[in-house]
Image (cartoon, rainbow, N blue to C red; front, top):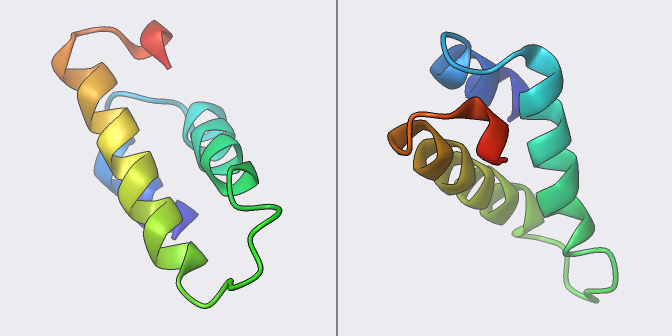
Length: 62
């Protein structure tokens, strides 16, 4: 998942920024009892967060 996001947003964000975004989103699910769909949700939410910051024109808004 992180590699797909790096490929999608590599022109705008460093590998570290993408990894930090994925980690931040992933931690939102730490206490959830059902984890089957967490990777799908994390990728979707990270993609939305990275895309929103990209559309604002600043990689610093993460």
